[in-house]
Length: 288
Image (cartoon, rainbow, N blue to C red; front, side, top):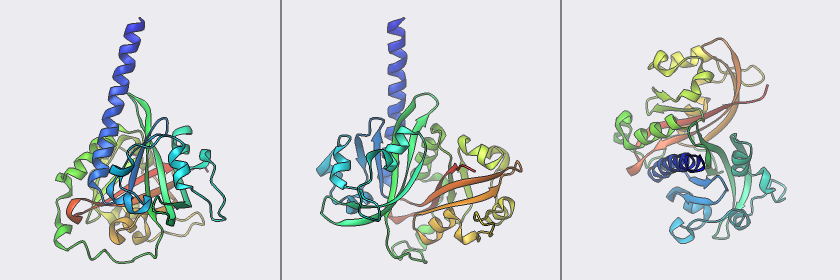
């Protein structure tokens, strides 16, 4: 019996490695800064877009053990007070197994202090349980309202459904317990994973491809004061049109008629060679 239990545990660990590998592969393709930790909060990887913010290349740092990376980057709040480890987004994602948003100061390994916004979310699966967490973060600068000139009109014509970044994203999303949405560069819904179905109120296979304006009319998203959110101000629209990450809390009506309060972060899906593929949203239901 002991050998059988050990065998099942090893299978779960190996299955968990698949999601870490997929997350790392996806991060390597994308232009948004991403870092990955394991369930003991050792920093396993950060991608190339994260290097200017962290102040060092991953090839130079390698994996960093728990506590060491927190000491190196010295996260602090708006008053300059150190943020306790248990309140840092990645720690909360692991300890509470829920997403966490934060805005803070951090000192890069190049000695530069930057204002950072970011969301961390658990990497958890039905088969393997909690295997780690991912952080998507960005430096707070003056917001740009127009698409980046680095991304040409031709790159917008990419067939998102067949790009390797989209394939990896969907493979990963289908394995995770975190609600994930994706739309293409024109705002068409590419997919949402099974954990997102309770938030939408119906399975993706039943909803199918929905035009952007129809989605806006159906869900009737508002601020907490009841003000209607303009289509272009939705997190996914901001990420897709302005090519910048976005965090927002809002209310909406699901297709099942239930009114929900959600926290949402979205980031542009920009692949290799600056191909604009669309946007990715990570949503979670907030407390009422």
